[in-house]
Length: 403
Image (cartoon, rainbow, N blue to C red; front, side):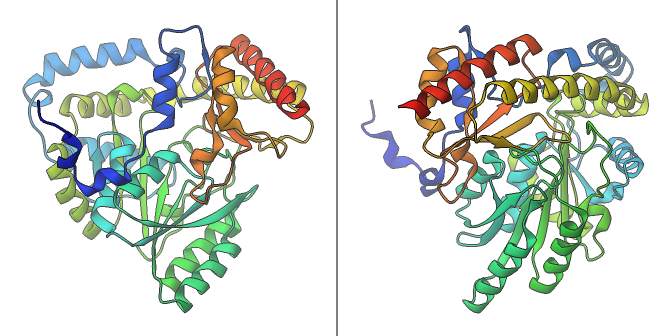
């Protein structure tokens, strides 16, 4: 046996962080644990019958193509359907501007690998999506953390930080944001801040990565426009996924950007996996053509709205006085701030012992903050288990305060 195989590892592995969500899911697997950790959709939301019929027909009628290699950019008919789908939701993108990816996580990886050099600065929210943080770390980015409040990323603070960076000769290359139903906070960026962000992009010469998994199913009417729809300078790189609006097992995501950038993203993806599975693309294409998603989404919205409201009600009843959270207009999560002195990371093992898993909030902060926060998923567990889990957590957190 070779001694100390770690000496063969690349420097990049020094920046690799374990996904706490994946680790918690492993702990919960096969145990009687109510998991509020992962962002898993409710299997009841999957249009299984329709997808089964589509998959059978695709293989029978298009098997020679659907089971074959396909272009890295994605099959042209699917990109055309995606373009029409985005247009129906007010987001402009031509087929040649779209790159199909293997889930939106690959989209983040493709964009980062293409654009970020070691030492480049990325501005992002405090808190923000932890899997994006981990990807940025692997490519040795520097972070500029910007507070997130009830109106989303605080662009006034962003402007101050950009001014400070410029005075020090530091150029911010990207701003990463989830403007609608942000993961993990659940808040949405106001229209004023969306406009301001795009103005700052022009003034300080940076690109904006708009991660948008949730705007296609919001629980209340939302008067927000996509940053991509508001972009006049070609600075917004848009990405989304079918994981939340159809089924995560298809592993279909996409990037929509200026064609010059998309050309470079295509080259990067070629060296990753050649192309996203052709069969999944054909199935997703037919789901769009048959309006499966449009018919399916109202049921998803109603299902998740009821679960969100059940969790909010239970939190109001059971969480310690002084706790706070936003009411998300979409997405799968509620992000809670508990009274100071509660460390959700240290309390996680006790919560698991009592049969509940969650994600400690410090994982979502690049500045080391958030020790008294946690992210809770409401989409996957049944309502009765949501209420039971929140009751257990409320008791645990109150006990921690009493010590």
